[in-house]
Length: 169
Image 1 (cartoon, one colour):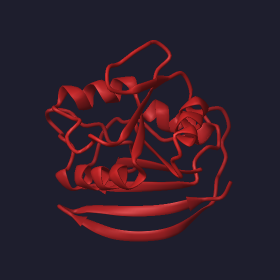
Image 2: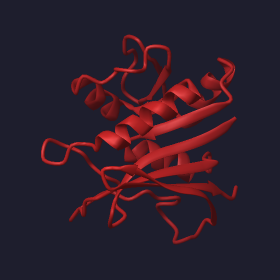
Image 3: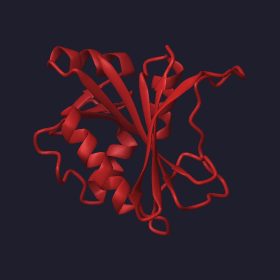
Image 4: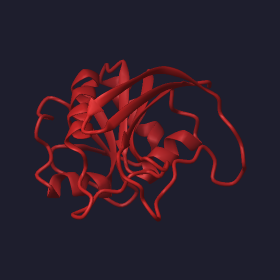
């Protein structure tokens, strides 16, 4: 199964955190919806899912399998809850999906990256600088590099640029 990590970054490279003073860019949200529809699924952490749902999220995801990774939640109506990244991928594979879209938050992204479960990354770079932010990490304990290959670069509008990379695994 091909795994794609989708994230929005700030122009200075932080994992973009949205909120009332910095809402997500509509171009990035539309791009996420397009990728989720194409994959037929997305994997998300519980806090990020609750934030999506609290903001009226759910919109274009009627036929999309949503998998929430949570160590605490046992059941969330309308979605599948699993305990680990591997369990999320196994579930989607059993459902016949060829691609898994990993959508957020930073802890989920870092879990998948740290376990070497990501084949491709899509970074939408938002036109904002963030003073203190979260980072995407391939390993929290060691300083290391992982080589990537640029697959594409395109503007999404609203000064958002998308970078797409394949990861050597």
